[in-house]
Image (cartoon, rainbow, N blue to C red; front, side, top):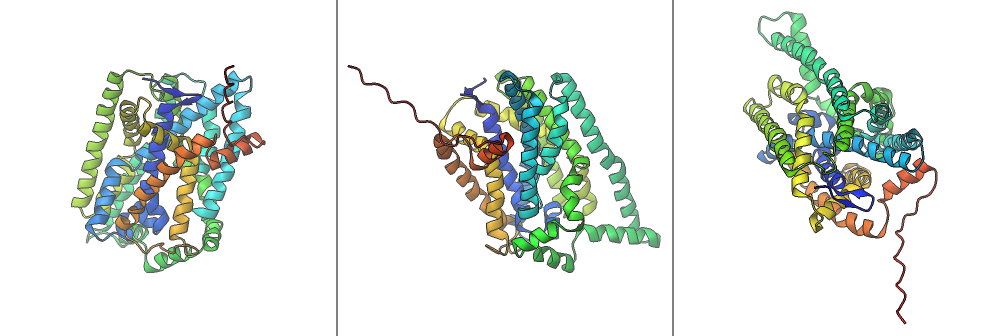
Length: 420
């Protein structure tokens, strides 16, 4: 089933393109309204049936899985870049680490200047660690990923559920004053006060306000602390990506029957459980004792499962060249530009310096921008890449990593000599 275009692998580009589009579906909420609403919908802008519908659809089909898929593709790309560097007579680390350092620079600009939801710093730092594993064979990579997931998922189960139980005890009428106080503090952290909402809005009334907030106090350290937070999970995804590339799964080398089995079992099982989690949360009216365990603990191990299910489904649907697959592949080839471009659009729409819509729209209303931005990704990416070698930010990343300006415009084919 494998299909390539020049030095590109079609399946990798298509998956990457769909992943970056899916990520926007979730990220738009973090760009448009207060940060707490990103993690607990009732915290802000969550009143109508449309708000609940968009949350439910994102929760069932998108949340966690497309970030995992993007991270898995990062591991696959790491392997591809390093392998080709070695084939060209270079040392892998001489190519890989300059790329990560350049990515780190972009991530710092993204986080400190534009948006708190940056993941590039995490990718750059974790990518430096993932390089140590890239020579391992797929079985050992999968084993290492499982260990990473264990460190990431087991502590929340052990300690998180214990804390939730203590908070539940503190809600009982006969609870001690100490337990009641602890429960009240926990609920205060889930639902922001009027003062906290006002502070959050103030930090987005201009770019200067955001820069000031992002570079002050604990906020300045958050992206760096992510390495021993969700960075452990990211490492697991990257290792699975390396294994998926080496095994041929991500390059379309498996049989249709194998991809069908993976899609049905992984994606089918994931969507069933995600649907039940949404049902349970809606039925409990987003009671934190139901919502938090499901969204912050129980569903996390399914991120990789669902991601591979989506990858298998994409392999089945887009395994051959076509106008549609080429369009999604172009979005994937320019994924870095499309990711950063989405943030730039969000900044223009929501920050007070520009559109000023931050905190003015509900969750469902905010999502209406997503199809428009998706259309923009699909409309610009292929025509641009028909004329140029890279997306604008891909060109800047490669030029910075190689410390040399790369050729942007494609060479026109040499005119054929007229026959005598």
